[in-house]
Image (cartoon, rainbow over all chains, first blue to last red; front, top):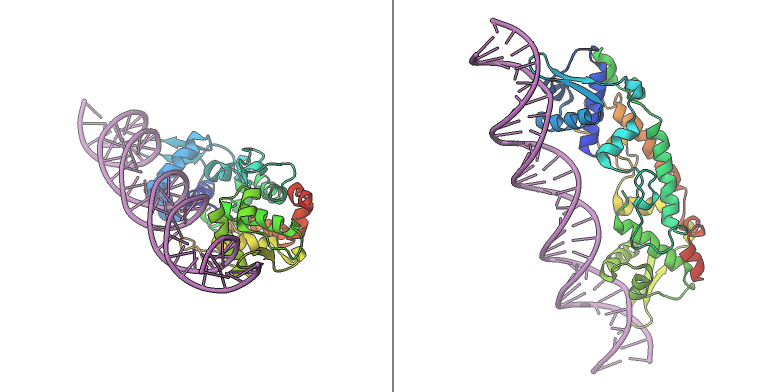
Length: 145
Length: 145
DNA sequence: ACATAGTCTATCGGCCTAGTAGGCTTTTCC
DNA sequence: GGAAAAGCCTACTAGGCCGATAGACTATGT
């Protein structure tokens, strides 16, 4: 399940990418437009900024801007940041492998086998999709320009 | 993330499928072999029985048995039963669709678009895999016979 | 009758998610 | 220089769910 935080982040990023380039967008405006609790969104944008995805400007006329081109912003990376590894089971994760403590023979584990398939399929999709790709299928982001 | 409950269920089912046919396996034995808390496993097996996946026999010499052939036991169905819909977002679910309350234009939602892809890929894998398939990749289930 | 083994309901602690509060810092503009 | 605007940051909390446990009840075989 995608957390609300991750979902809000994706929506906010699309809105930011659709905004006139170079012009910061205020948290309050973004929150209203995307129907996200403002204070919660604040936290999310802060995380994105500390990750290097966003830039910010303080004071009057300030707000948030993308720090990279939408084509350079990867969805898989974002989802992992907010929701952790994609794999349904830690022993099937590529980026955050962890042994199952109750598992004897990991190499011969049927559950791991199928969950590795699921993780690979998910990763294939999310790691190959960028913010730019996602916007092409979003009416809100397109309509904003 | 796959819940422990679902994982335990899959492991228990593999063990049951690998046991001599017609001979019930006791909860306690299954729990010991698969390293699952016995009382917790009890709950899981009960659910599987009420779902029609398992059969049970009470009293001495009792225990659990598969109610169907492993080839007729579908992994997707099991995962959904324990962990709910496969889709990362309710509006992308096929079997348990639910509208997002904060979403205006669902058809033109970028998040939904990509998550539908993820859901389809996951469903394709899990719905086409049976207990029998999974066992082929499990050393424990094979070694038990 | 007694032991065995599944059935069922209730409960609990801990953690995580979603969200809130409030004070601090930086920047702009008059 | 000071007020207002806006982001920065830490702390906190309510609620829900997950993993697990307890214990009493029921059916079955010998």
